[in-house]
Length: 487
Image (cartoon, rainbow, N blue to C red):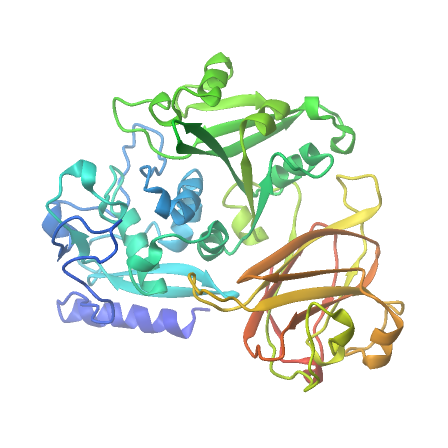
């Protein structure tokens, strides 16, 4: 069933078409010049694509070639959202999920485009007109927001909608990957330093691939005091072992593909420089010439690249990537820190926290991780609070996890419980999003999102696990919470 906002936008488009009019979005500022130096180059005109191009398309493909979406390399200040978009381009259905493949510039478009983003547990639609910033700068100086690639205007339309979501184009200068991945896919993003990996990470990497996670790796090359970056997507992970749990690092291979489009007449070597990575790639025989993807050993991978980003997707979104062989259960909850005790406390002093006055979630871990032999269950907890991308002071938040002795314990548990038992683990950080991947024994547990006394904000909690489990929402006395989705 369509949401109210969906129905309103459809009706607005119908009304525009009946009036033979085009949407003029007066709620989005159209300056004649941008103030940020990374965006400013010359005077701007806001033009519709049918003025700039004789026959514009949202998505335009050459049917004689691979129907793949590509985007150009951007300024590093925009990598935080261009990398997720480039990663999604390898699986076009992910892009079509936010800007429908049926959108076009036909007579019934009404000058309006609808782009979906995920915000605090729900998908929302942003409506924009198709007036795009245009200027007379020479093509090499065109900033990313003007780029209409050879396969259509979909990219500048998405970027404009994303700018509207955050307030302006200037607000898109610098941000975080986890914000962009989350808003484009609803996924939760983890970052791994490949020099400090947890034990047997090659098994985790295979599991992430089998779960249809989006993965990209960063290569850093430094020369003459300058730092150059190149970004690669992991598009396949192979394992020669008959049982993943028994595999060794030497059994695992990784297939990588350069994320961004290489202009005609250019090659990857023009972007990764004369570096260790380029030399390694040139030595590899397993190369796909069409996609410029390369196979390398797991050990070569972790000793060549510096950082790995893994975006874990909901089941309903993961199938746009590939059919997962490991199904991840995802539970999402909205809540609020407004019904807390008046007792003063500090998150740095757990003994002072009145846990019984915070929202409580009971969940059961019933099945051990199938990729491990240690009989523990792996799950991911992510807690997000509202806040601007560039807020100078993000409130301290966290979550505590307790093991419940009684499986049928009624929520909320009171002060007596917290005096008798200690948490099995906790995470406390300053940040819009904090997360932790955990492994616990089979049993029944309690998750409690916590905040400082002056923090009366809403929050958004995500729990993702492979093992089957159940989550119990609390009674109203423990806070206002309700499940939004279950995939």
